Length: 85
Image (cartoon, rainbow, N blue to C red; front, side, top):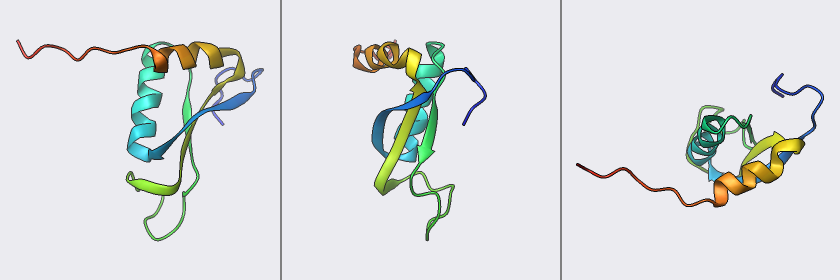
């Protein structure tokens, strides 16, 4: 696990279909100052640990337990894409 919040237990927030989706989710949470990391369930196999596509078991994003509700609210909030202006 990450050394952020050593006194805090890490808990699953969401399991996503691919490593790419998990990386985007981690980046979104970290942009809101919520520590997060991914736990790839398929870190070995024919595709190897760098594989970013869909996996049979998915990729779980973990956050500190004390930040779980905040992280859920961030994921639930609507996001607007920038205009093409």
